[in-house]
Length: 87
Image 1 (cartoon, rainbow, N blue to C red):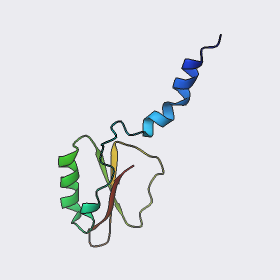
Image 2: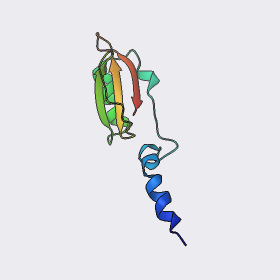
Image 3: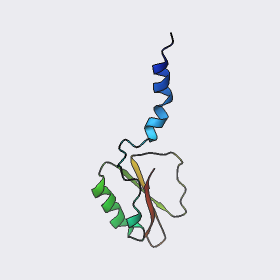
Image 4: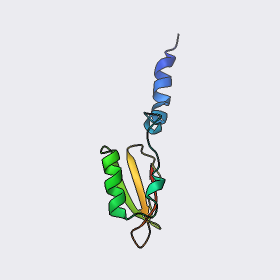
């Protein structure tokens, strides 16, 4: 017989990399929209110190890779948050 379990594990690797390890994990911070960038960063770091925070201007170019351990804060020219989410 074939060892199908190793095929399943290797094919599911990319799925496991982006899947939520905890279904209760916070994915978005809508309450930070309109807040100051510095305040938003501090709030996210306090709630989840393990994440990497990336700050991007509204029209910035960003990589398309999805990382569950990263939170991207998108801000406008006044350094006010437009969105904050994992990915």
